[in-house]
Amino acid sequence: MKKSAVIFLVMICVIANAYSVALLITGEVGGNAIYEMMVDGAKKAAKDFGFDVKIVEGGYNPAKWEPLLISLASTKSYDLIITFTEGMPKSVEKAARIFPQQKFALLDGIAPVLPNVYSLGFKDEEMAYLAGYFAALVTKSDLEGANSQLKVGMIAGDIYPAMMEKMKPAYERGAKSVDPRIEVIFSVAGSWADPNKGSELAQLQFSQGVDVIFTVAGGTSVGAIQKAKELGKYIIGVDSNIIDISPKTILACVLKKADIAIYDLLRRAYHGELVFSTYERWGIKEGVIGFTFDDPYYLQNVPQQIREQMLKVFEEMREGKINPLGD
Image 1 (tube, one colour):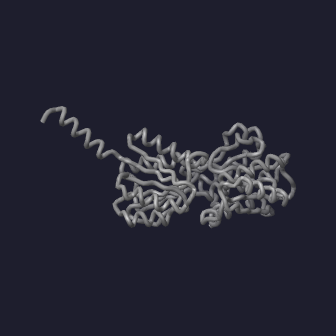
Image 2: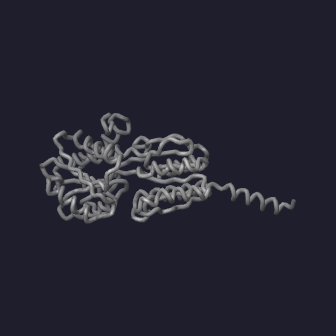
């Protein structure tokens, strides 16, 4: 056989055996900080390790996500299919049972343990505890927008297990660990994309004496931020650093470093080191939950005493000295 023919056959084999990954986004990438981080991390891994990654946006109709997942699996084109969030465990389980030879990974959620499924969840309770602790320090401070009523707020986009079982209790626990007299007012928007509802709920909370709100509501949070700005009150952001949107209103953000998580997941998968039929939950200790300690506006607008207390509690959480849920 001629040398050129051998080279051609080798190239075909390499192409045929190339590692391939599909990401099913439960929503859209643009404007969603978490998904933008996920995609950036996945693309970086693909570039560093030399594999293909296909991004599929599922849109905002949850009824379409499971059929899309099953459709991707049915093509048998991917070594690994990754999807996201607490809304997908049952869909991942269904697809994994239909296609037992297909490998699946669920990120930012925990799926049932199956031989072809790996899950990586985030310790959202750590983010919420940090936010509650910070909110309490703000409401007890001499900041211009703070009052003496010891009330802090939280606005959620919707009700789901991680919110009600982890984030809300941890936020309350974080606030009350500073001062047990603090009252937490909790509101649910029922939508992740309704700024008007966000504004309405923020107005209601501020009228009840709240001076700082932790918003976990996606695009709905935009309205809450605007209302806080109008009234000279404060916001705590979530997932990514959005302080520069309104630096005197958004005092801090708790961070979910999703790009780091998906990069590491894909590194292990590509090298055959990802252990399926298992799940993990990562947080501060693993370097994927953080806080805007280094943001210049945070350093400028938040009193030094509060910044020092936040560093202290963050380090205590890293060392395992604080359980956000108190179990």
